Length: 187
Image (cartoon, rainbow, N blue to C red; front, top):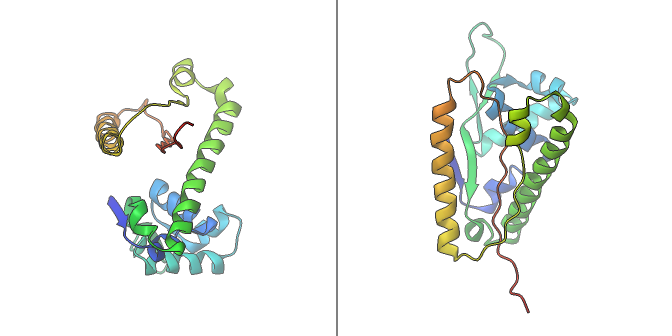
């Protein structure tokens, strides 16, 4: 599965519904599912999940897929593993900027949920996982070019580590949320 680069605010806006973004995340993480399976998972009705799946398909985020043993059931799968965008490109319109703002807040919310889940689970985790987990808070001076280089290096290193650990039974799903934002100039 590849990366999807969104080029306008209308495309990104298609993701700015809480149920849509959660369904896309589940399809990316767990693989194909039917509208009924997703409705059960998110405690909603099949009509709502069907509508939102069709909306995601309209913008190329999901597609129907045949699944062995279920000739009549409509299964949906994510088309891309990740979604990216350039803030200047999608932010060229108010609608696009609002969509990008919403997506960033969703990602920050995921981080908060992950921290809370870790705090609840840490008594049952092996010590090596407790020590490996964490959040960093760094304030450094970089140029925009260096920040872009950092992103490139980060994703390259992450891809290398994912490939290395792909067959390792000790590997677990790990949520990684990263951010890099310029701060206002100090007065």
